[in-house]
Length: 246
Image (cartoon, rainbow, N blue to C red; front, side, top):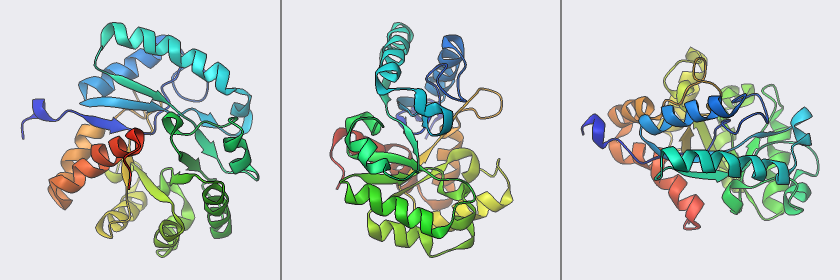
């Protein structure tokens, strides 16, 4: 497959929305990241600013207003680039209720929630968080599962949360080994076991955390097969965003 034909990736985890978290600082920075992603072959992007800590102050109304401004700018430069809005929701008690009340955004108003934990979280925290979100009628997507100590140490945890109804997302830079060997090993294990549903960029800035979906697609395709790579970097995300997920 030629480089030019590698298009159509769908990125469900990004910090491109300007000035709302630790991602893009301003509109220029956001547009630079969008340009990098678009030129890398990404055609659909979910903007997922943090909901945790001080970022709880960003109300859904404020995020939607910022999103509309960015979308207007983006359409003038890349008419075929599709943007969506959501949150990366940090786990806390009663998170499910906050989602149901509309205080935390799901991904593009679907029943799917990008769910984040503390990197040093306990096994019980993960299970409690997944259970609460599922019991409130939503499907949690575990954000960058490989970055949590417990997922690297406990090889049964991914299967257990999947059995509860959760899905698993890995970061492209971790898969490629750019975040350390330990994270790469964890990604390799999860990929081999078929315990991954999405690979996303988790991009924050052009220099240290750029979008790398094309490089990751080539890596996964070579080692695990092209069909699997398309599923993780396009097909599953499209099904989720369009309401066709089974």
